[in-house]
Image 1 (cartoon, helix red, strand yellow):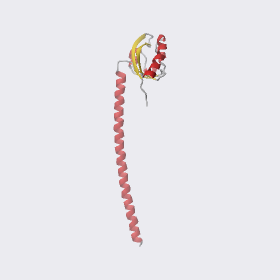
Image 2 (spheres, rainbow, N blue to C red):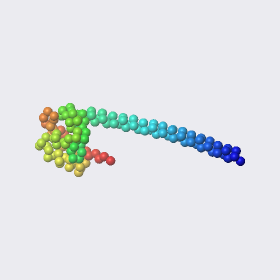
Image 3 (cartoon, one colour):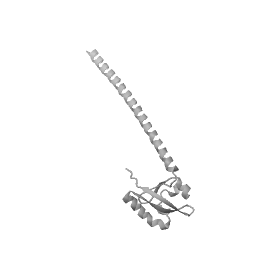
Image 4 (cartoon, one colour):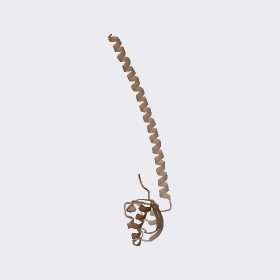
Length: 146
């Protein structure tokens, strides 16, 4: 009677090992497929980011991305060409530091208008790094992050 029990346990163990092997193979295959999908998505994201960065930095207009209270978060490289500032000199600072004093009151109207209407346009006078004042036509749209 011990032999049939041993045979049954052996068969059960063998079935368990085979089943575990199939599950392991499935998990490895699934992991590899998920990794391929993730790698493909990462490549697409990197390509999209590269395209955005190229467009952002090569457009001929100055691009300021700022908070709703006027703190500059990002600028494109055109700010150097047009105003003489390196992006690091502008990022993190208030737009009030760059708008000419006579345009300072208009900045509040602009920020309020963008928040209320979702977009705003007009003319602004900005002080370049060498102290000259330059007039720019602007058109801004509020972009809400999720």
